[in-house]
Image 1 (cartoon, one colour):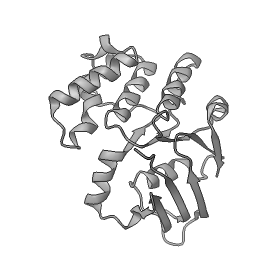
Image 2 (cartoon, rainbow, N blue to C red; image 1 turned 90 degrees about the vertical axis):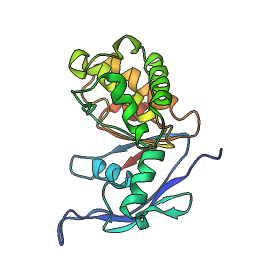
Image 3 (tube, rainbow, N blue to C red; image 1 turned 135 degrees about the horizontal axis):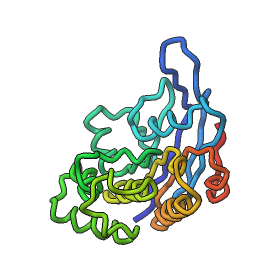
Image 4 (cartoon, rainbow, N blue to C red; image 1 turned 135 degrees about the vertical axis):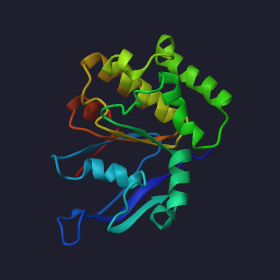
Length: 215
């Protein structure tokens, strides 16, 4: 399968009418099979850009383009379907539901694809094993460490086999060892041509990335 090509064109965004503008017509093509670090001072729009690319926010002007198709023209249902099938998210605080088991958290994004629970459980267990988390599959988030929770978040992002992974400060709360684990996983995710974009202040993440986009 040919890797998808993601890009932003003439992007502008403001949270309110006549409010401060972000991006100022930013255009950039993200290389498939590469890790791109989004850098810049706080308030420059790193997280906002991820939310726009994930179709959670709409730009004021400009477009999010995948394989030549402007995704900002999608209606809400089309955007939701695309998120479920093609985009994986990793957030700084893992954002795991405290009420359900680890394996159920990993399975959740795949349910929006309409896949069977049996198929998803098998895929989720395989991912947890690859991240040395098989023994924690039945645990609740409150029973695992922060580093383990972030590895669970990586499994959850990968369970739908997305071609774009958006990571917002994924190592911000991690020690050095777990930072290496998460970055290795994000780099491995590019092996099949996936595009990985990481918003970060971490010099180690920037150094480990293939490209840097400074906002």
